[in-house]
Image: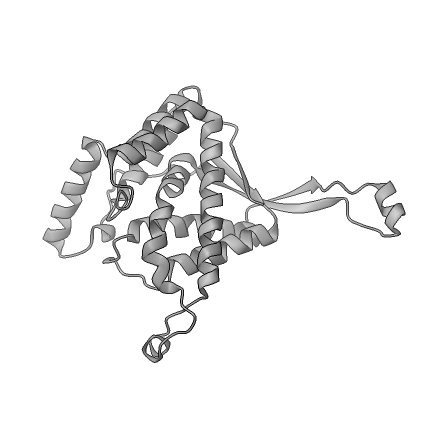
Length: 260
């Protein structure tokens, strides 16, 4: 089972799990996001952020991030009783994810389910096979929703460890009350999440609790600053005849080193 906890400086969360836990969630994300990689995808921004976390998790179970030994409950008397020699530690892998990034994914990923349904079929059509489209069983669709819901709940629990359960409840009520839950993150301009990440990183640890509460609320309530950024990006995209996701703001620079 994947667990999440806030990092020491409240910079983000540490996702931790065993090899099978991480391997399964990576497979699940690939299935739910499908093989399409088009800027016309109405959930391209959400998928891209989810795949970013997927990338980190995949590198974690490949041993490129953090490796931890944890006690597994095996003790000498148990081995003697069962006439077996057993390891007394399990290997866990972990990786750090910035808080605004993780919260955005946790709040947005459920909107992919209906859109991602098309990637799950009992059998691909001849046309789909010719195009190399991957299909999966419907039972995987049911399981993948559950796995992504669990990942989201794990992240939100880590968020509650910082801002409190009452504030988490308010946040989820904002999400339900302010917008139609079915399309809150449709065509979401995820450059805004970069802005939130960098703004959060510039906040001293002592003030990050209040800042995180504020950012989480802004993710679901889309303030004037979000709408202004969206309008400017759409105008620039029209001028350059490209997608907003092909544009970048040179002012949005991440620090080279992050103190977690």
